[in-house]
Length: 369
Image (cartoon, rainbow, N blue to C red; front, side, top):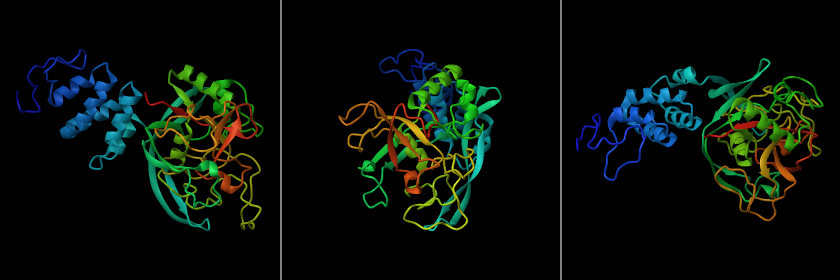
């Protein structure tokens, strides 16, 4: 068998994964083999070929960049993961050719709520056309591992945030904002919201309403839209942080909520809005996600459980497997315009009846396959 990786190896019996590999046969090798397998109808074959392509320098990177146009979202994710940290090339510009980027400031604050750092960052997204001039921006959330819940030493925590546990979340897309009234109207043809405005988040939406929206959006776009799992929601909210809010210890003036706590004095110069605010009014986190704290409670796909005993650790939604799960309650996250500040923490969770509507909205996710 030849030792030259750029030449086909002996028993070049399998091209593109179109037939089973005979016992003892060798797959076409080198960059030619990678190109051949990237033409395979099998998604798993194409993903494996991408992981090999990275070994072939610029030629391999060109193939990976080309895979950003693959029809399979799973293959796209594999390509994104391989390219994201290639610092020696103008990968950001290459990404932009296939998947747009947007820039934003990531802000952190000190314990008094004063800004103490600001840096420029960017995230990748794709636009989904909903019709009637309305679009939906879906942000790429890279996969990773985080500690879900809050430690026992955390202030203003609730016992249902325990036990804190490690969760590994695969990459996925999530809505840049909660679903707006314009987006809801484009898909559902009505507007149930109390506070009216096209760029305000839709509210007065039940869990069943949110699931119905995802179904109609999936049918229209031919993609598999759904609600975020609770683990995905907290992972996307934290964006690599471990503080109570992705801004830091507190979020004074950076979130739409009831800032005046009963046991704390008024903060000079700050007031409350008394209703929802336009999405994107406040700075995002490091993933480019807006309005994760406050504005509207966001429905998740999971049933409500009183704690995390027996919770999944793979980022999936929690439907069965623990006797305290409830059929009529689902998880809500993020807090609202009328919530106290501590209720808007990254780890804060609540359970609401599937028929409740008062202060509930949602954002959507896109499955990876």
